Length: 434
Ligand SMILES: Cc1cc2nc3c(=O)[nH]c(=O)nc-3n(C[C@H](O)[C@H](O)[C@H](O)COP(=O)(O)OP(=O)(O)OC[C@H]3O[C@@H](n4cnc5c(N)ncnc54)[C@H](O)[C@@H]3O)c2cc1C
Image 1 (cartoon, rainbow, N blue to C red):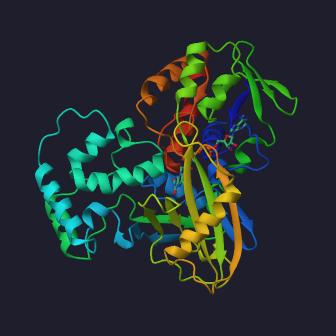
Image 2 (cartoon, rainbow, N blue to C red):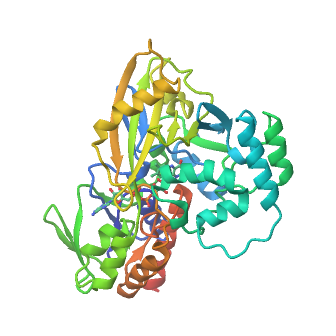
Image 3 (cartoon, rainbow, N blue to C red):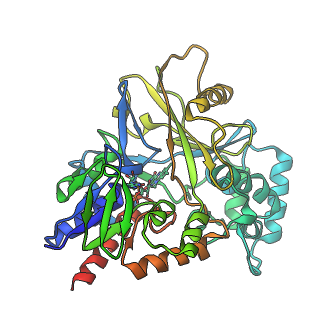
């Protein structure tokens, strides 16, 4: 039997293995950590379950919905999403462009008059995300909302970003929707996530249960070298093994330097690929009525976190009875905003701003508090990405490494897209065999 190696035990690695299993093929997954799941993993501490970063499934792909449902024996929550935004003491429904009601009058008037100016105009040539924002929403909204949030989330300015990731994430409303949302607090839900599903028990990682027996999972196998000519893999634990076919979900800037004989231009391109690093601060308190929204976006630069989620609102089994939980995300990046403190040092400013915004009260008891880091979080679609990525991908195509997942394709993949990407890598293996 030909040996099929899969690198990385995240959702992508498992979907590749699952697809091969359906064809009667065996595979081995090599994972550097002592647990599986990658960014879809979940952990339980002090009775609180937190996912690595906040994870919910909002896939519209019925096949994947069905697989995830089977994975948790059909025990999942279906939740109608309430998402909102915080800006300078004001809370408004998401997306902000259709929900201006409650913001200061002058700001609303400026946003509306700029929006009226640009609405219905044909786009001229758009060179970057900043131009797209101004052409879509007008200058006032662009500068006060998505450009502020974007700087916190992507860690770089909008004029340094492309627009190939924007649809369907940035909603472009009709004039009537904007006017309605400026005059009334009650508006239709137009966010691209209206509902989500989440496992009732065990956190998001339970969605992988179905796939665990479909492969030979080798934990504690950190790849440190890959020889494409000898078709050989070297691991940090001293093990050396061969492969006939390989699918990798490893982050490209990590994978490429490990490849023997990699040309210098490819190596250089891989190091130009930018990604955010997320510090996640998980907090458990002795009260569940913390927030009305399932998640909230924060625009102000002097608020330490970028986004908050509330895992006990995803499943009540994520917390001990009567407790509530908060997950705060703070974004950095090697390229644009290097980490200037340890995750531990992020706890105090997070707690302080949670108090400032009214989430945590003086008499609340903190039952759990922990900070961790996601080294590879969201791909930054900066203006370097497209060219650098095509250099890297062409090289991997040449040497027969099938790349997949969020960090192999280097895209904005949600879990369902990562799942399909893993299946596609498996199909490439199958095509290679026929
Ligand atoms: C903060 C955050 C929130 C998100 N929220 C959602 C959400 O709500 N819904 C949703 O659908 N998607 C969400 N996503 C996206 C989702 O996390 C990804 O689509 C998905 O987890 C990518 O899976 P993957 O298997 O491709 O990568 P990963 O999960 O990163 O898996 C890659 C694996 O490779 C391993 N690895 C790395 N280097 C080596 C090495 N040298 N040797 C061996 N193994 C190695 C890693 O340890 C990891 O286990 C979110 C992502 C982030 C960062």
